Image (tube, rainbow, N blue to C red; front, top):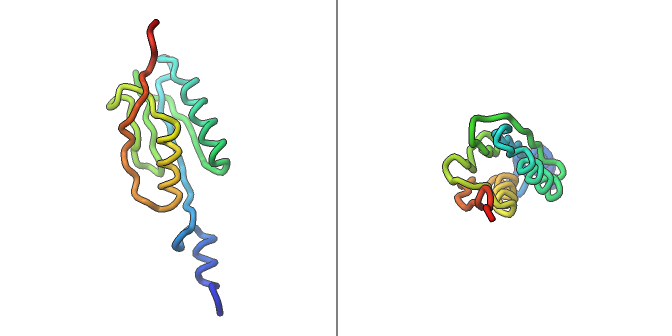
Length: 114
């Protein structure tokens, strides 16, 4: 009897090495013009992880907050900018592997004035 329970656990996303379901919620300020930033980020996430569930919600003034599986991992209100795609992709990888999530503290400036 080899692996029956392990295969079932992996299929359920609960065994060692199994990828877990990841749900992302991005809350952003629409009047601030942050929808294109959300769309760009969502597109990059879907390109890397086509099966990821990502949804948007309208948020308060200046908001661009990202939760992974209910845990806040990025806050524009705290950081003052937007997340780098690579940092979010890394956080998703960690969540899929069942690793602890850390807050993303790197951010790119919200705009450049020339």
